[in-house]
Image 1: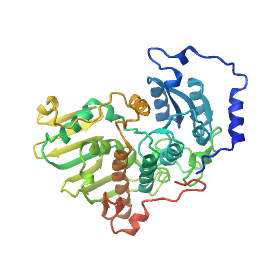
Image 2 (image 1 turned 180 degrees about the horizontal axis):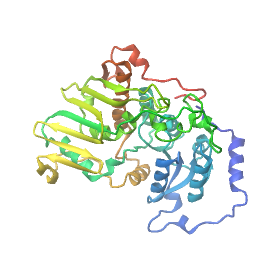
Image 3 (image 1 turned 30 degrees about the horizontal axis):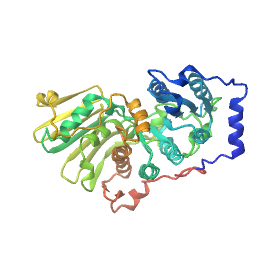
Length: 418
């Protein structure tokens, strides 16, 4: 995937954008109590401004010391609307946005199949990145993302916003500080997927660059349900379904609260339904069992959105809107100086902007994103193969199973590559 633009093309684009624009320095460029001077701000480019992308766009515009200056989206109306709001430039092709030397970081909120390819391109262009969940659609993508961001020393923030909620942090601190004793069991619940979706072929809407939208995935006949939720989550060409898309939230809390998945090889097995009619073909009604190397048993099922840590001396259950403990006294327990104190953030978006400036890790870093994403990806492979598979976190490989290993990657449509 080439990020190179010819010098002539880049200069033409720059010239076109400056024609008939008066040279005026806005008062906000000089800074005030809420905004730093322009030279000290983090300049942002937004790639993908649909539902969640539009939410992130507005959230980032409210951050101190941040300035959104460019928008890329395959839908013309979306990119032009957001570009008008921030008085920036709109791009059909995200590579033109990444070619700008005046952009410090990008916010990636595309459909799932584009998350890692765009994040990799951003890191190689020396941009920091806020990337929505789930991370990748394959194990290969996740590991490559970690490698490239590490090599390029880029800041990464995962879109698991619950890490900036006080109750989620406090619950995980209690678990890591041993307040429930030794962990014996983990119970993770995420919303379920489903079947359906129209397969009737219809014209591609005006203003949508469908070839770019498909990107590294196969180009299939366009249908009304293909490029919008839940199709963007429940079609296997673009996602692994809610196993990863929603599972990312409670699984992220799991890896924030403990390191059971790092101790040694763990096995993954279970069942699930894969629709054989309609457009949607990702796993739903799953029932997964994961056996950790230290004897911890984990179950992952659909139906809600929570993470429960069960120990020898009590339990902590965390969900997006609240938490609970046993004994109840844990909810008001004070942590001492020798207990575990996790990174504190009260605003997920501001935390990203601040990290770009300070070069300190974000509250939801890439290595944790990879760990939680791997669990959901392994669950998907186990369901599709209908057998147990084993993952070795020391070597980052599936153990002794060539067929499962082959499923750890997917072919990408040319010219796109990792």
